Length: 291
Length: 318
Image (cartoon, rainbow over all chains, first blue to last red):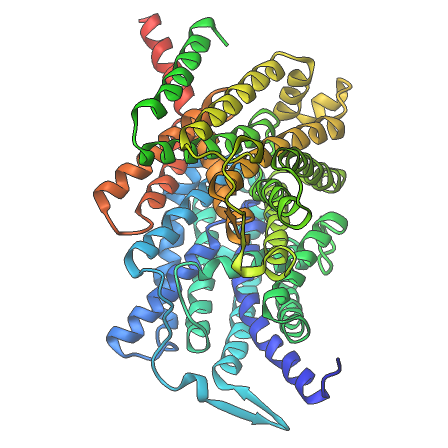
């Protein structure tokens, strides 16, 4: 079977656009991993939560999902800070496998609380988001996806600036490198952990606002993203921001081309196989140099 | 394992064995489902509890046991008992294969958990897409009541077989915990580097653990398919069984002999209770299970069994 080049090109571009939002989801995950050295298994459930928050805000107050970005990011930052500082941290007694299980417990609880509240129905935003397209050459590109692409790059840039140029960023990097040394320099590690987790959740809130115009939400939607995000993080090298960005774009294209060539149900297969192969043969990631 | 604890377990299994004589089909159904989860959780516990390798993907073994058993009967007309044995063997083989790949790459901790989940998902997507495995509509096993076909008119027979299986695996677990292999597992659990320095072959020990663990969980899958006579990708390879096996083992008491059984019974009992109170609101029971998992990690690292031992020990010392 061969496909005309326009269709392949459109799939590649569509994949890049979707991939940029994947990258944003993965950015939150990789940041938390890089600093706390933990895998936040509740990342997907928290994303679902954010998507429902966007849906509720837009549906009941009528504001645009893009206006919701900043307030929602602030709220989710606070939620993340509190979760890490007062629940995940104390409950896991500082043991890595405990953290994994605590976040698994949280994800089960959150996902099913959403199921109990909103039922299993799939919801989308009202409005004509789906029909807004931009013509680029011979291709028709969805406008919400284009906005998502640009905004994801901006957020990644801002995050990078925050880490490199601010005192908080320096403190975060110090804790990531050497926890004990950072504590001896007067950095409050628990506080930095909370801030990092909060930043990860804020990334999710932004991703949710960017996703909702072109996507749907149901209580299980986060599951579809969480393994994709893990794959991106592993692919890009755990803890690496540029890695997450490149990994996200790459996975977006793989998924889109896989869906085109193999059909949607098997398209997802490529992602999991990449995940397994990278972990087995190149656990430091394709783009990340450090272990 | 003290004699009093052993007596308690024997009594518990005896009481469970009496239930089918007195109770309605609904209760027996509950019991069989809980026993299937208990069996899967006992398997999980060999790897996750005794060896400390937390798996998020035991569905890979449950589903393999179930699918191989059903497919051999449906597609090749094999006898149900032979197919059941083949299903368990196939589950063990799946464990061996995944274990060889994953432990050779030295994946552990969170990486191990995630990669097992990914393996289970790959199998779920494949069985969901392929016609040979029934695709998305699943596979129906022909109803042929009769002991020769591993099918029984009376649900109580399934309950007794389940109790016998669980009892057998409990004995096996006890035997392992007191054996050389059990000591090697404990060494891997506590400190891999120290264990290696003492001459424990880490790779071989983990590989044996995952193979045995997979075989037991595959047996749960075999049992599931013979009891319900229906299977699809989301049942066989779905995350539900990975999660329930893990929850039952951890909430019951990770690394203890009886924890997975106690946990499975407690969780399913609690599930029925919440469904009774909350009625048609789906998901409430799982919200509670999720929070229980967090609470268990925070306050009762050895689960119900550990908390009970502490309580009894505290009273004795007082």
